[in-house]
Image (cartoon, rainbow, N blue to C red; front, side):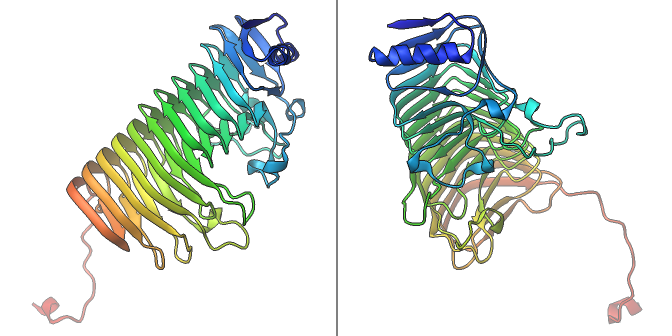
Length: 394
């Protein structure tokens, strides 16, 4: 059954969501118009549908948003913020659909007046809301909508299952920090397809954030295909060193354009949690049919010295076409070796650099048709040096 929102504000939307939920569920429809809103709570069996011309307009002040509170998510939250625009916890059969727009007004949360053109806005001290935050939800659909200018992570999916995201557009000002595209955290059976990402921070992120040292976190069975990624940071980021397990994920048919690293799973001290020397285990991840054009590393996998991950294993790169300014990097460091790494049909150019790839501490490296050309920097200036060698006496 359809429930038409007639009051053009967040309270009107929430009232209709509650009405539909009390009747067992239904489709809550927003017609064309602007709907200023603070936090909205989805309920089980609810589809929030934005018709073309409908805009949910997030308030530009943090105090207009609720903090996302749940006993199962009692942890230090990223960017010290629990605020969000669209929230759901322990729900099933929920959806956000339609040709409309959800606008978080992200730039309004930053000091733009004192920022040089093209530079990142300084991080504000006040908390910034995420656009969408879902915790322990099942059978989730997000289709066709545009998510515009999230002040913080655009979508944070935590411990969710059976999620389908397709034909969406995530557009964020590329001068904003932390406006990630989709953070898929400890989720299972997630598909992201046919979508466009333009962000100032990472586009697609796989995480397995442990909420406590004795609480397992597993991110698995994620399929991403036919998407375009545009960012000055990472196109795809996999894990941080204190995460738990990320496994059985596939990326295919992607295009990356940006200044940052195309595919990154590199683990250093700057993301290491207190009282932890590293815990992450990544295995059985495949990348196929991907174009990467970047001013940085096309691919960077590995860890800094002393970080003791449980393993980075069975990672394959097939049919990868690249143009980058920095080398492909596959560098394990003892005691953590990269294991069973496959490079097949990896071709392209590393510009203004004499080194096409850096490989170290890799066990069972398989390479087939790897063709990487390099171009060097400007010709060096001849300058004779004093030497005691007999060759200089002639």
